[in-house]
Length: 292
Image (cartoon, rainbow, N blue to C red):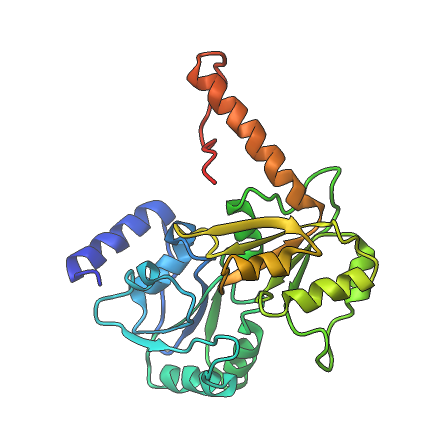
């Protein structure tokens, strides 16, 4: 955890970068997105919240290096949810946020990705508003976009897609499940959050809906982190190959022709790199690392 001196230096640096950064008032709750993993993707306003919060109520997928940015004397409370494992009920989390704020604490609710993209941030805002608790929402880079970028898969590509669908990977056999046939008919790429466990069933449902078996598909595990893993396959094989390769959560899947552009980008990037090394080009190479 940062020392008091480090904390002061952090505030000073934040002021230089951000100017008038938002002030965290006692009795206020901030719902903050921590991004998809890599601390470099944290926003300056998220950092402002971490440096001022009295209590950080955080999810399971928030990187430890992000948590380490909090004030040295801040209280840390785990409120993570992981599929298939015991976890605190959402109603209890909402009640705790209200209770802590009523005790005059600056409460930072820290979520992986963006709080309003499958983060249940909307439910927490409604609970805070109903209780009369002032709040602020700080957006974050959602995994469905940041994770794709880190894997060299453009979320949108001219001539490839006109939209992108963000969906949760719930079991297609559950009551109230999405209409996967309708999604298949759009022929637009689908990004599945928390979809690894049901990927085989979802792939089968999409193929029944008319999506070709050879549709490009990929799984990205630990997106943006040093141990990121990327598996590229086809819709009919992706679930079995991810299982065989021991892919585990946190992981997301992407299905659609944008996956095919990954190799095109990597090949082009590699060519530019080779040409630059041999002196055959003077093109700028800033941010053109081809790390896979």
